[in-house]
Image 1 (spheres, helix red, strand yellow):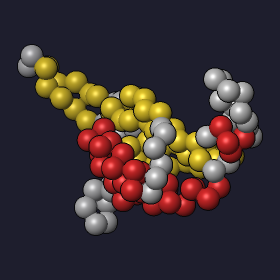
Image 2 (spheres, helix red, strand yellow; image 1 turned 90 degrees about the vertical axis):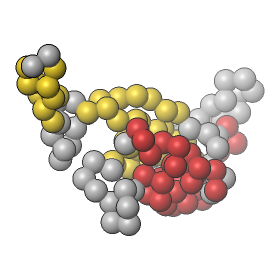
Image 3 (cartoon, one colour; image 1 turned 120 degrees about the vertical axis):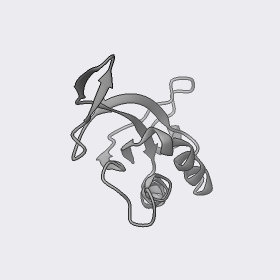
Image 4 (tube, one colour; image 1 turned 180 degrees about the vertical axis):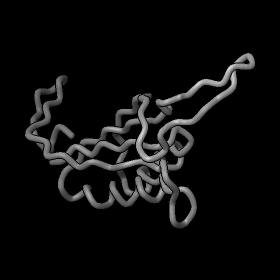
Length: 115
């Protein structure tokens, strides 16, 4: 089992959800987060004063999958999250982490059955 964590552009969320549905991944957790990487923020003008916005709005997805679904899930996130054919700085990152166990609270099922 793996935990896939993806940091994506907020405007790409619906496209990623559609791509995940195509590969039969239906369960995910979505969080609004802030951060920056190579984009390093930007400057904005507010009431005539310029100020720096260092943290950009992003969306964090967490998806627990069995090993057979790791590569299809990654491919779906890339397909839905990439801007254009080649992508752009700020499209996001995907992290794949080992998941030791998963427990369904309602039934007490454990492991791959609980996902």
